[in-house]
Image (cartoon, rainbow, N blue to C red; front, side, top):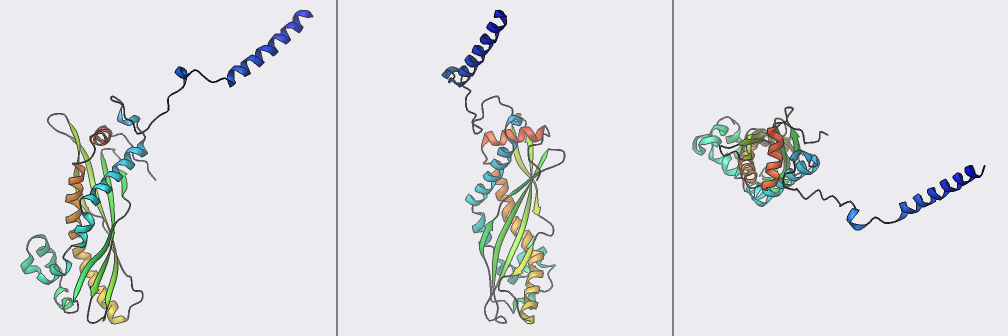
Length: 262
């Protein structure tokens, strides 16, 4: 009977001692170190990094790079009116080929005094990884206001324009074994061009003019915009942080998924 009672007392003391030890602080040399996701240790496999961090870092870097390279200024300075006035026979090259397809340019030009792009905006970039994991598709959404001065309207017509450019990003390895990111196909997303009247409802003659301008812009503007955007994307890719490039390129070469699908 005494042995059983002593055993009960001993178990109670042991439980109290264990609870007390749990409340004591650990020695400094045994504390776990805080994790810093921004630190990439040498030899750390790229796939061990947070996918959201990699994808977000890439889109942030591309967006910042495009802005610092003067994307908005180049869009604002697109000589739309000059392009339309030169006609297909004198502009040559890409513009000449495009204008040759626009049959309504000449009659419409008599109704336009001035045409300017204002308030260009680079919206939030999108990122999608190909099903095989070896390619990235970056969506570059752009917004701008097109101000058109016409004697028919008696004031400026303001058109809201939205357009998406899609750039394909690939990982390649050169002869020295170094991997880097390069630009593949770069074009406007089909059907992404949207043109609407900012001034609200327009009388029938004005609406006809808006429709005519929209028809021409649908044929000209996407190619003009991508002609400005795509070379800048290629330039920005060549200037990205080396660690970021290597981490992403390594995943793409091995076809490993790191862009979270939403």
